[in-house]
Amino acid sequence: MWPGFMGPPTKLLTAAEPAVQGARAAMLAAEGVDGPLDVVDSSRGLLRHLSFAPRPAMLGELGRVWLTDTLAFKPFPGCAYLQPAVEAALRSGVAPQEVEEAVVDAGYLTVTMERLGREGGLTPVGVNFSTARSVAIALIAGRLTHEELSDDWLARHAVEVRELAARVRVRHDWALTLATARGVVDAGASVRDVPARAWPRVLMRMRELGMSEAALPLRELGELARHPGLRREVRALLRAGSARGLSGLDTSRLRMTFPCRVRIRLRSGQVVELEGDEPGASARPVDEQRAVVEARCRAASLEPAVATG
Image 1 (cartoon, one colour):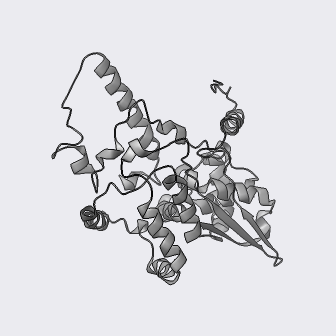
Image 2: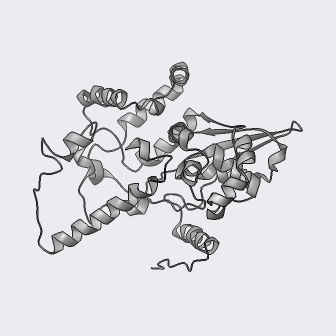
Image 3: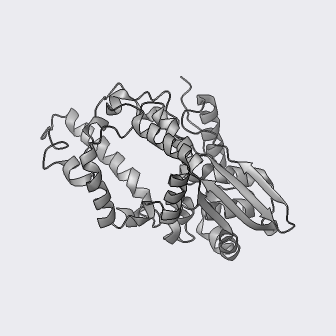
């Protein structure tokens, strides 16, 4: 549930607990325990009750389509959406006391994460889901590791982190949103398996569940309306991809990236502008991803155990 997702410590359970349950289910099945085969797609099943629009085509293809191929390996602790902003901030070489303002232009997912994580506060999870807090800590510490997320470090630097984070703005850029969308649509992903009649229910459920942070403000929808080129590209992306769900997905081509631009205005009046990079991101070379994992292990004083095959 959203209240436990982008702020409180319960976030650590959202992936950990389902992984344990999945492994347990597999072990029980191996021992002969069975159950209703239609528990997912029954009219009283999972898709009916827990999805805004049932998408059975997104299930199946076990042993053929490997979504693990699309994993991102992150250089910094935190959501994948904020990785390039932190990378750019660190590469800027700017001292925190020199910063007058920092503007991060990013795509829809990064901006939505920032809104949802706003109430997380200065906690490890609150930093993990805030571009502003993560960039502030990176500039203050000259790095962003697990050590900067310790209760002691955050308590000692709370005033300066909050003060600097307040000068970091995250704003939406349609071109960056479309760049993210192209990376998945080109691999066959799409929403074409969702029938037109289902979309009113999707919007209704978003309103019922108070998901206003996931909606684009009217001024940004107005920007889309004022630019015919953007509208054409949005329509093209909605028509592209495969309507076959997972069976139409080529994971070797899927690039789930979150490009951003970081523009830092210094107190001197100078402006530093960088494009964020995403080493280890989805579909980046395996050797690069391995290097990211090994660096994270070294930072945590762990021996990396990465397959070489």
